[in-house]
Image (cartoon, rainbow, N blue to C red; front, side):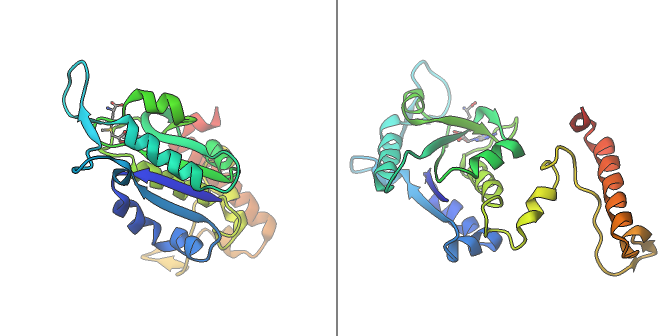
Length: 226
Ligand code: SAM
């Protein structure tokens, strides 16, 4: 899988993408993630990328042309196929684990991170296939949402996680939440690990995990049981 990000703040993305599991997957070549600076596609001495809003209003808006050129250059750099272009936006459809799994099937994704008050609608109409929101709140920029999306999607790509089946048993993958989890020591500050998990009996352990998952879902997210 190949992901290209179009952003005004590449360093925000690069530092996060270099770390931990995703960083290792990129370094080992399992996935390719490239970051592009929209400002490189702006014209003029000052490389201006934003301007005031027509119709009034506070703040600045990203102009259509630098964003258009950046995404067009990314598309031209790809050898084959048509990439799926996503704009991270609070106006988008809220991200779910199901959508994450579907996106993990794609070969090429381009993610555009907005900033300031957003971007001129015309470039969205022309180049964007899907708008995705990471929740009903507003952030200062689309870089963190883009990184959230990338992290969630890349976990589904074979070779990224050390144990591939782990993402299938996690919260939201089966509709509910995952069971409670414990590690050593067996007794910590007087609290014991549930006996079933220490029994070595596979059937007992499976039954305990199922019950724990159900109880947690019922207590924390009863809406998921509907
Ligand atoms: N004026 C816009 C509105 O009210 O819909 C908000 C713009 S926001 C301050 C700047 C950028 O942050 C957006 O262009 C978008 O890329 C990103 N962003 C903010 N909140 C987001 C969210 N919940 N999900 C995805 N992207 C978000």
